[in-house]
Amino acid sequence: MELVSIIVTIYNKSQYLPECLESIKRQTYKNIEVVLIDDGSIDQSADICNEYVEKDSRFVYYYQENAGQNAARKLGLEKAKGEWIISVDADDFVSVDICEKFIDAYKMTSADMIFGRIQKYQNGQLKGIMKSIEGIYAGVDAVERFMMPHFFSFGIPTGMYPILYRKKVLQDFFSIIDLRINYSEDCACTLFSLLKSKKVCFISNVVYFYRQNDDSFCHSHKKTNVFSQKLLQEFLLHLFQPHAGINSGDKIIRWLIVRDLLLGGYEYFADYSGIYPYCEVPTGNRIAIYGAGVLGEEIYEKLSSKYICAGWFDREAEYYQKNGKKVSSPEEINEELFDYILIAVTNPDTSKQIATELKRKMKTPEKVLTISERIIDSEYTFTKLKELEKVSEKYIVEH
Image 1: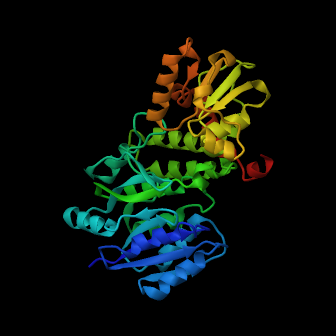
Image 2: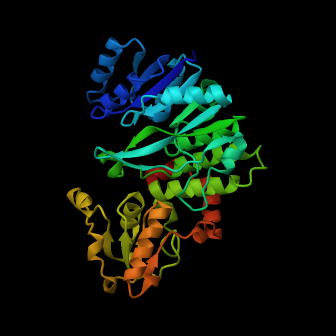
Image 3: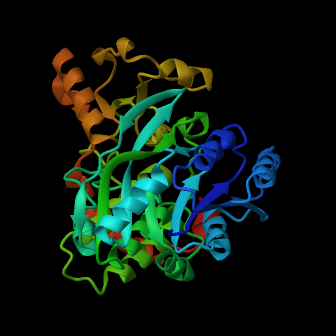
């Protein structure tokens, strides 16, 4: 039987860790080892891990001073004994048959990578299943399907889960990736691995449950992400250089970097004549924002003196109010009080749905603005990404 090493990276997730580890312990496929990497937790994570180590010989535990998830995953690879690797975040959990499904798919297809499906989990309830292609592809062909037709939409999982990797491929990746990349490094890993794989299999089974807990719901993202994106862009340009035949390569890099800057480096677009990435909005206008997620938060904080904030709305207004944010329910939207309302929602389908509903109710539907792919693919964006090459590490300090 193939030995599967499951690497769990942990940083102060004791609240959710037992559910994660229990789902792994109960695997129907028994030939596993569970490598627990504690990245400097100061909560009860160590105690929980040691309980599992004492009761189940398949569990091993390692502690390191806080060095970030990249370093934790790299250490996990160094300690892992299996030829096959599955990565799990400590606040998520997996189906009891994730290993069985993956190994069965490998035996049937001899694929170099196996992808499963992800389902969101929030407040004790299962939510939507994330989109993904299905079937068997050459690695290069799977990369072509990485981006969906619309910005912020992906055809395959962009994180390191739920994926069955060959250990050697991950070792090669972590031997060259700059560990200072702290945003979308897992996405870079997926692209690297696809380009190294002759055959990739996407199964239809939901095997991974992504927890949208209060920490993620509160958008604990990094605000100083620009230098990290400079490093990521360099890595991706180098990665795609030998693959000129991949038609979507440039678009993947551009859209990925812009996405990350919007969510964790929005100040980089401060010199845009309007509000990036929306159609130009005249200075001095009254602006309302629909969406209090990461993008909405970034826009709200960066409206500056050029615009008048005329309202901030979200369906989860009550939650955000409890966390001290001046967010109102969409039921309170009054179009007489603003010149434009920006739909700051990253999911393209949800954004379209919200925009359609608002336009139907409003007397002046042209006030509703959604993310403009024309702006994202504009000369301004190309220039900004070119300028990104010159960004130094001091940018973090200066901003």
